[in-house]
Length: 158
Image (cartoon, helix red, strand yellow):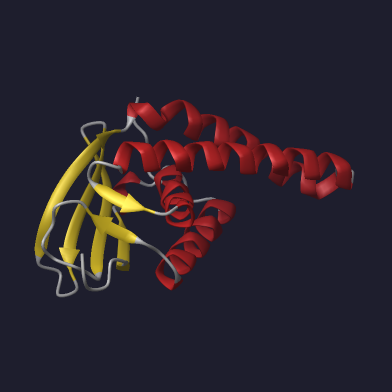
């Protein structure tokens, strides 16, 4: 596909956000900033070459990707089963909570160990997302990691 296969802008359905803690808001802002700075997002079989606007939401237990052109004209909409991500998102938030508690008082070695576990779960979630997207959108690992962060801040119902 010739053109600019990347995400130009991304929005999250605020009704789907799981919680508004300062840490989650910070992670969301960093993920969006990093994603918009550098990403590879190439829809499979779509004539439009990008850049794209992506609206992410949860509807009826499905993670919805609403792809639009740079003028916000709808191009493609598809969903992934949100329940696929439920366990890893829950585990990731549990480890993140432990990490944020640990940085207040724990020894550096304990913080590092928890952070390694957190990064491992994050990588696992990103690879799972990348695998689930592969028939719809080609993304590189850094893009999948940032998208997984955004999936984590959306409400996974159930």
